[in-house]
Figure 1 (cartoon, rainbow, N blue to C red):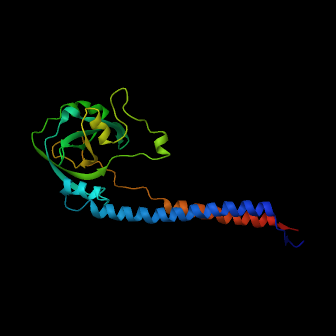
Figure 2: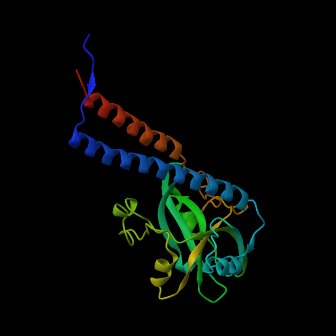
Amino acid sequence: MGAYRFQFRPVLSVVSVFALAILIALGFWQVRRLEWKQGLIAQVETRVNADPIPFAEAMRRAEAGENMEYTPVTISGRIDRDRVARVFGTYDGEPGVYVFSPIAGPSGEDVFVNEGFAPQTETGAVADLPDDEETTVTGLFRYAEQPTPPASWFQPEGKSAGGLWFVRDPAMFAAETGADAAPYYIDRFAVDGRDWPKGGTTRLDFNNRHLEYALTWFGLAATLIGVWIAFSLKK
């Protein structure tokens, strides 16, 4: 059986080093994403069970740079359901709409309240929502939705022919009627005695496969090293 000897292949080595650097960088990027996601999950689990604070305080802290996402908040005022915005979405695999209604904010601007999900078969329940003279809304503080690539490449903009929005952006909702809105909204908790729209539908389970992705990139890096060695050996 013949012995093998190492033969340096310049082109192969340069390409392999370049590809190896990319694979390792991607692996460590996923490790950092894993740490970030674990921190986010722990933060949200702690935050959503806290006592609600006034929406005005949450907005002030958000504008000062503090991350207030998923903080329980409360606001009182009159909900204007003459200017409801309906956002297309799904819940438990069923298509329908999320109902966004404005309420007067601390500085007079609109604060939109996501009152929850209504399936397509229950559109009448949305139309029959009463105008509340004065009510207190409690829910989770949320930032305006800003899709990023690659999702934004396939995200429709504006409204559909049927009048449904595709992005949860309070500024867009308010601008349609010439009003101003805070760049935040409230995901309302479930309201006793109301079937639709169904509140308390905020998604709090976050996909966390970053460890799997990291191991995949590191595994590809190890495979590349093995291939480089195999092609560099000669009898």
